[in-house]
Every structure is written in structure tokens, then in C-alpha cells.
Image 1 (cartoon, one colour):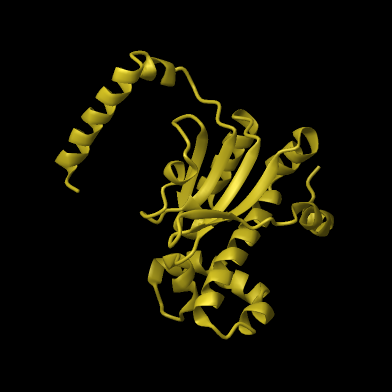
Image 2 (cartoon, one colour):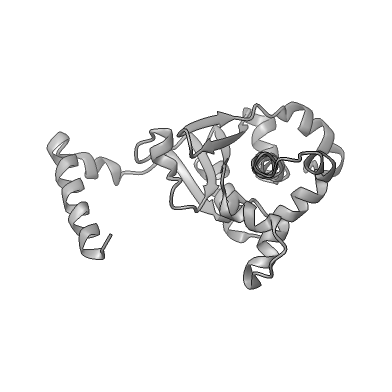
Amino acid sequence: MTTNQIFENNRGWVNDKLTLDENYFDNLSKGQSPEILYIGCSDSRVTAEELMGAKPGEAFVHRNIANMVSNLDLSSMSVINYAVVYLNVKHIVVCGHYYCGGVKAAMDSADLGILNPWLRNIRDVYRIHKIELSAIEDEEKKYKRLVELNVQEQCINVLKTAEVQHAYRTRGISVHGWVFDIKSGKLIDLNIDFEKIIENIAEIYRID
């Protein structure tokens, strides 16, 4: 796709919207009140709004390599703060996807330079769940399971933040772990038991 094509597509998109509703962009400019914060992967095949069927204004989206939530990443922490404290989202979704290049790279031992410290977070997930993962002989199944476990651990990182803990106690914000299956196009809810997780981490990570 060329940049000229992008601007041509944009003109067509604007015309389509205005044909349906002449006030579409005026209304869009008045503000946002999304109910969902979506944290996903930057992979070009995984477009958050499209796979959820979300319209502009319905989802606040943050994407990075392998859908990570690191407390040292000011971008992720700022997004969570803004979405929870100022936008008052009701749901936070961490969505990974099968055949994720970042997870695959973390499973290999290659030196990837500037990517090393980022991928180490995923390798830490592998270390935490080494017994389970080492018992999986099929490499593709192991790869897919690490994708799922990485989503789970990033959800736990979301729950460790002060903003989310406060919102959980005061207004019942919920956290969800999903995986997008590229081969089928389906979203999979991992049905993570966050009540149990919160109980397990409360002693160490609770922030009043």
C-alpha cells in the first residue's frame, strides 16, 4: 500500500461516513467515553477495533510488541492511568494472539539487541511456568501455551497497579485475558480466575 493510496482511502472513508451521517465527525470531536481498555500486540495482522467489531469511541487501545504490561514502561502505565482514572473504563482486556512473533523470539536464544530487555519479560513468564511448559513436547502447543500464559501474567501486572486496585474496590472494574486465533479469526476468552489471583497477590502487591 502506497501513501497516496492511504490518502485516497481516507477520502473515501470520510465521504462514506458523511453520506450516512452529515454530523458524524462533529459528534466524534465532542469527546470519548469508551467502556473498554484494550491492550494488544502491535502485529499488523491483529487490528483491535476490527476483530472486536468496535466503532470509533468504543475502545481505548494500547498496542506494543507481545501485549506487554511492564511497570517500567511509562507508555503502558500512562495508558492504564488515563483509561481507568479519567475515562472510567469498565473493562480492561489484555489480548494476545497465536503465532506471535515476539513470543516466538523469546523462545529462541538469539541476541536481538535492543529487543533483549523487552523480550526478557516474556522469558520471565517462561521461567515462572517452566515446569508446565517443559512438559509439553509438541513445539507448536508449547508456543501457543506460552502465548496464553503471557496474557495471564500481563493481566496480573494490570492488577498490580494502584489505579486498577482502587477501581476494582470502588466500582468493580473487571480484567479479561483473551487470545486471538489468527487461523480461525476467533477471540478466545481464557476465563482466568482473577478473584483467586487477587487473593494470592494481595499480601504482596496490595496498594491502599
